[in-house]
Image (cartoon, rainbow, N blue to C red; front, side, top):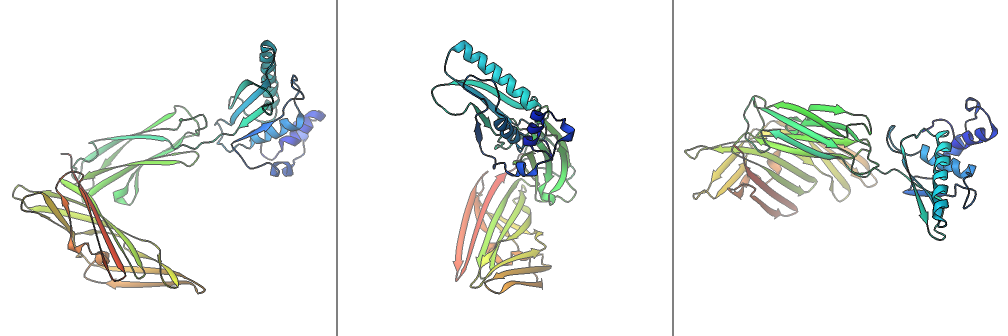
Length: 404
């Protein structure tokens, strides 16, 4: 894109024979450009059989191309040059001449060499203008592939290294801007970056690759969760996650509690192993989130600090071995803080902060202390809900068998 100069002013100077360095800047001409649409049409040529370019139409086309919102180095769109039906040989020659004349003129106005797709066509009857400019439109997210060794879902122990290979490409169509960033983050460690690589727009090779190694910490979470992400230069993001449990079974309980001024969600990762004698050892980790909750006069939102903490997990297996009952404990209490914000009708914003030192953690507002049962098979899930006055609770669990 030519910065600080209107193509209209450049064209005027070219017509007048003035050197480029002496041209006046015309910001108003740039401000008059219409919002970007899917395409725009032009009468570029003086007549149906002419190769002479109309200065005003050429200036508007050049401004549209120069203002195409794409990163430097990426295609700036497609120009379709057209003529009406007639003698085939003459019309083909006319199209070629128009194409050459247009590109030569545009090359003096906007730096688009090799970045503007051009096609020619013969149309029948009175089908409209003799040039159509299609704006570049990057609407697709990159394609992402990720694999690991060991494979996702595999049981891991402290010190185990997980090698992750990520490949991403962003060339599904002619307007894709290319992969900007590939990252690998450890979600189970508050989003710690394991790898992050950046790339130039529309650069080769189209497929970008990253390999990274993650080492399971000495005190691992119940489930190691790694996420691969790829983003293109237009802001489209795609991600893929993989879980690596530290027990023979693993899963997540998602519990919601809603009532009064509270609207909370707890996500509890758990893993456990069953010994030969039937003894079960388990551990869990909870993440708390709160959502806006409307009251009579205010909409309340609260945050809980700390919002993540370990929880004890009790797992019981039924007599026939067909079902597990999973119960997160409220034990492990510590001082935690509730910060409330209320946006109130006609009263502005109210805030309040209260600290609690209690013998149970922030799961106290959830009724999963009664446990939730699930079949003892890979991929099994269950959901339970209950109400009490103006309160409602919902608990959902999904469980998987780890790869050994």
